[in-house]
Length: 120
Image 1 (cartoon, rainbow, N blue to C red):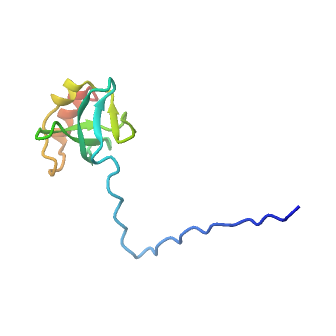
Image 2 (cartoon, rainbow, N blue to C red):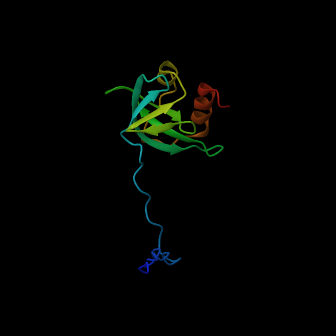
Image 3 (cartoon, helix red, strand yellow):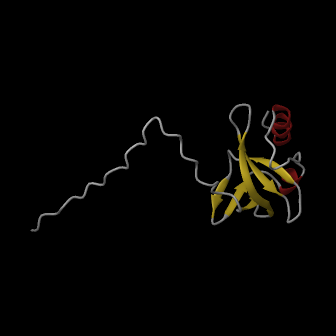
Protein backbone atom coordinates (compact mmCIF):
# COMPACT_ATOMS: atom_id res chain seq x y z
CA UNK A 1 0.00 0.00 0.00
CA UNK A 2 1.46 3.36 -1.04
CA UNK A 3 1.87 6.21 1.39
CA UNK A 4 -0.52 9.07 0.73
CA UNK A 5 0.84 12.58 0.82
CA UNK A 6 -1.15 15.15 2.63
CA UNK A 7 -1.07 18.64 1.23
CA UNK A 8 -1.54 21.44 3.68
CA UNK A 9 -2.91 24.58 2.14
CA UNK A 10 -1.54 27.76 3.54
CA UNK A 11 -3.92 30.59 4.26
CA UNK A 12 -3.10 34.00 2.91
CA UNK A 13 -1.39 36.11 5.53
CA UNK A 14 -3.47 38.83 7.12
CA UNK A 15 -2.63 42.33 5.86
CA UNK A 16 -0.67 44.51 8.26
CA UNK A 17 -2.83 46.55 10.62
CA UNK A 18 -1.58 49.85 9.21
CA UNK A 19 -2.83 49.13 5.66
CA UNK A 20 -6.20 50.58 4.60
CA UNK A 21 -9.07 48.09 4.25
CA UNK A 22 -9.65 46.64 0.80
CA UNK A 23 -12.92 47.56 -0.94
CA UNK A 24 -15.67 44.96 -0.75
CA UNK A 25 -16.62 42.84 -3.73
CA UNK A 26 -19.34 44.31 -5.93
CA UNK A 27 -22.83 43.61 -4.67
CA UNK A 28 -23.59 40.04 -5.77
CA UNK A 29 -27.33 40.50 -6.37
CA UNK A 30 -27.07 43.59 -8.57
CA UNK A 31 -28.81 42.91 -11.88
CA UNK A 32 -30.84 39.96 -10.56
CA UNK A 33 -34.55 39.87 -11.31
CA UNK A 34 -36.84 40.56 -8.35
CA UNK A 35 -39.86 38.27 -8.06
CA UNK A 36 -42.62 37.85 -5.54
CA UNK A 37 -42.85 34.38 -3.94
CA UNK A 38 -45.69 33.48 -6.31
CA UNK A 39 -43.26 33.86 -9.21
CA UNK A 40 -44.46 37.10 -10.80
CA UNK A 41 -41.59 39.36 -11.85
CA UNK A 42 -41.61 42.68 -10.05
CA UNK A 43 -38.42 44.46 -11.10
CA UNK A 44 -34.64 44.27 -11.01
CA UNK A 45 -32.15 44.67 -8.15
CA UNK A 46 -29.98 47.76 -8.62
CA UNK A 47 -28.10 47.78 -5.31
CA UNK A 48 -28.39 47.63 -1.57
CA UNK A 49 -28.24 50.00 1.37
CA UNK A 50 -27.94 49.50 5.11
CA UNK A 51 -30.54 51.45 7.02
CA UNK A 52 -29.96 53.84 9.87
CA UNK A 53 -31.98 52.00 12.51
CA UNK A 54 -31.72 48.41 13.70
CA UNK A 55 -29.15 47.62 10.99
CA UNK A 56 -31.78 46.60 8.45
CA UNK A 57 -30.48 46.00 4.96
CA UNK A 58 -32.58 47.04 1.99
CA UNK A 59 -32.49 46.02 -1.66
CA UNK A 60 -32.82 48.90 -4.11
CA UNK A 61 -35.20 47.70 -6.80
CA UNK A 62 -36.10 49.29 -10.13
CA UNK A 63 -39.69 48.76 -11.15
CA UNK A 64 -39.86 48.13 -14.88
CA UNK A 65 -37.49 49.25 -17.59
CA UNK A 66 -38.00 52.98 -17.06
CA UNK A 67 -39.78 52.73 -13.72
CA UNK A 68 -39.24 54.17 -10.31
CA UNK A 69 -36.99 52.85 -7.54
CA UNK A 70 -38.06 51.53 -4.15
CA UNK A 71 -36.60 49.69 -1.17
CA UNK A 72 -37.40 46.06 -0.37
CA UNK A 73 -36.32 44.37 2.88
CA UNK A 74 -33.55 41.86 2.21
CA UNK A 75 -33.85 39.87 5.44
CA UNK A 76 -36.28 37.27 4.04
CA UNK A 77 -35.01 37.30 0.45
CA UNK A 78 -34.15 34.00 -1.23
CA UNK A 79 -31.79 33.87 -4.20
CA UNK A 80 -31.05 31.36 -6.95
CA UNK A 81 -30.31 31.35 -10.69
CA UNK A 82 -30.17 35.13 -11.15
CA UNK A 83 -33.44 35.73 -9.29
CA UNK A 84 -34.37 37.09 -5.89
CA UNK A 85 -37.70 36.15 -4.31
CA UNK A 86 -39.23 38.17 -1.48
CA UNK A 87 -42.34 37.44 0.63
CA UNK A 88 -44.22 40.52 -0.54
CA UNK A 89 -46.80 40.89 -3.29
CA UNK A 90 -46.06 42.64 -6.53
CA UNK A 91 -48.56 45.38 -5.69
CA UNK A 92 -47.11 45.90 -2.22
CA UNK A 93 -43.60 46.31 -3.64
CA UNK A 94 -44.73 48.65 -6.42
CA UNK A 95 -46.65 50.82 -3.90
CA UNK A 96 -43.61 51.18 -1.62
CA UNK A 97 -42.29 54.72 -1.11
CA UNK A 98 -40.13 55.83 -4.03
CA UNK A 99 -36.44 56.49 -3.48
CA UNK A 100 -33.52 58.06 -5.26
CA UNK A 101 -31.09 55.16 -5.85
CA UNK A 102 -28.06 57.41 -5.35
CA UNK A 103 -29.26 59.12 -2.17
CA UNK A 104 -28.67 57.84 1.34
CA UNK A 105 -31.56 56.51 3.39
CA UNK A 106 -32.50 58.80 6.26
CA UNK A 107 -34.46 57.81 9.36
CA UNK A 108 -37.75 59.28 8.14
CA UNK A 109 -37.68 57.38 4.83
CA UNK A 110 -36.65 54.17 6.55
CA UNK A 111 -39.54 54.45 9.03
CA UNK A 112 -41.98 55.00 6.16
CA UNK A 113 -40.67 51.93 4.32
CA UNK A 114 -40.71 49.83 7.50
CA UNK A 115 -44.34 50.84 8.11
CA UNK A 116 -45.22 50.05 4.48
CA UNK A 117 -43.92 46.47 4.83
CA UNK A 118 -45.27 46.07 8.37
CA UNK A 119 -41.84 45.90 9.99
CA UNK A 120 -42.25 48.65 12.56
